[in-house]
Length: 138
Image (cartoon, rainbow, N blue to C red; front, side, top):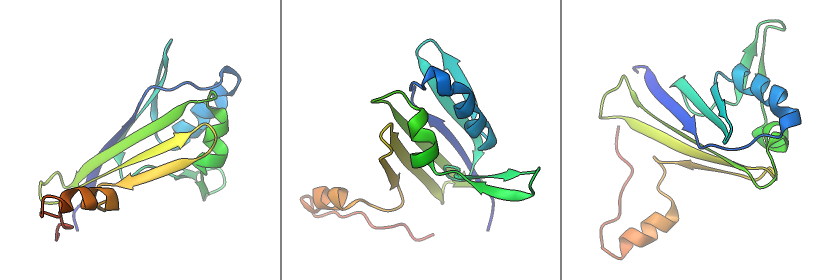
């Protein structure tokens, strides 16, 4: 199997001022580049293999899990949503493409969508036209 090359970015969202240092620490540990301006924060990630949930701690020699709902959501301003989109390809070929979207609300609720798994709502929509998409065979 070849390597998967992906990229990830977020929408612009706001982090509580008193929590910005902790937020930056978590995101940097996960490998994100952080762009901050007067309107909020945007996250970028090159060489993504999905949306990261762990990082390696060289001090303890362990992988550390990050629970976005419990550790990141409380750092967001009330009513804010992080929308991360990741996409890529295996060895940048066009015969294996992947992608996902992840939504995290400030109240801790989250939603994950993988483009390789057709949501039932899309299937129902396509059934009206008698052409239902199938999962590609890699």
